[in-house]
Image 1 (cartoon, one colour):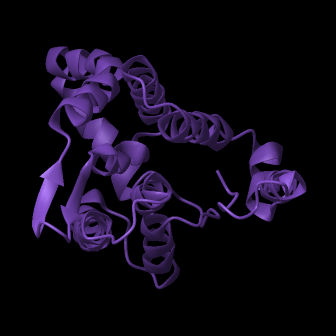
Image 2 (cartoon, rainbow, N blue to C red):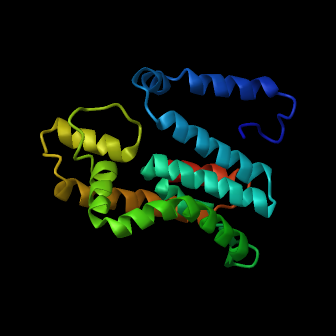
Image 3 (cartoon, rainbow, N blue to C red):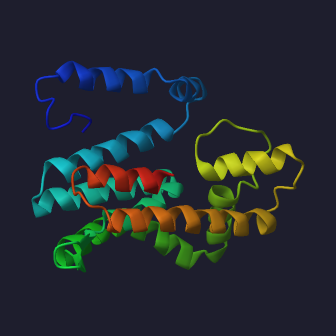
Length: 208
């Protein structure tokens, strides 16, 4: 995933990047605290690898299901879904091109694991409110936890200056941030001039 087209022989470069990721300071905190982020990272990277490596329908479906499992574990990765849609601007024909069949297959693959949660939310509506509060507002957070996500940084900033972390206050702020960052990222993703590593950029904006 990290090799360029002109670095076919430089396998040590791939190993170096993997090692740097595994020994990074945020990962050490996760090792100590036993966070589930490591499992989420595994599923995200695995789905990304399959998306890039294999173009067959069955592999694309498998990658989507794996991404859906990561969303069940860490719901904030839900915002990666728009970036798996095969949508892009064709500068030669000057129009937006959509690969409908493959995009629909990817969406169905992601929704397959999520359907179990949707059924529970339908049966127990109160679970949906707790889901939003716990995962997107930060109202359950009483400490300034380390994180590199934009929403968590904003939450920590408001906690630091003394703004109460009430879900009614924090949720609109998070929604605005997500819409702005996600919108800009999706526009960049659609109007990219090169399709090389486009999935990597899509995953990057989805994670942010």
